[in-house]
Length: 171
Image (tube, rainbow, N blue to C red; front, side, top):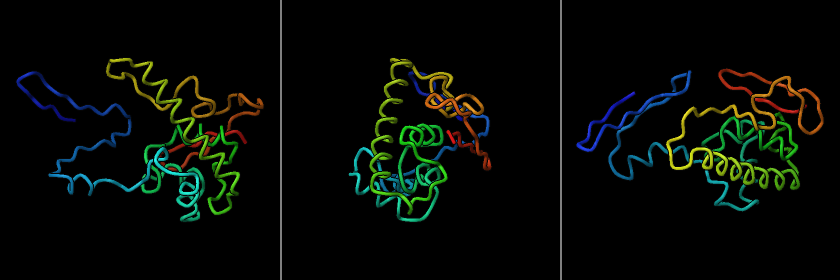
């Protein structure tokens, strides 16, 4: 995508994804940087009540709400599938239909899954730059495991494809 030459070496930015969605922005100062921020909140910096408030701010499917960077920061497609599986919630459930118990389970599962995967990825890469980054990990419970048996109940994992995204879940 770009190469920057410095006296100490070259920094090369590449796009590893097949869809080529990466972009490079040059901004000036904090205001320029803030203009690019979509506004999603960090699940580790909020309470369960705030999490529920954000989810219920519009009536979307759970999958859409979890992956919307204007609502929540850094969850993404693969980790939303894993989180919903751990919380035992359907990706199609509407956010305004969530019970207090649903919100609590989802909040706990989101924080646990993100923490778990950060630890796994850090351990794998160590002090090296992570190579071969992919959203499809062999140790994931549901994401990327279409038609494989669910690790919880052996029902086959199902998939919903929409545009360039997919949702994998236990029905």
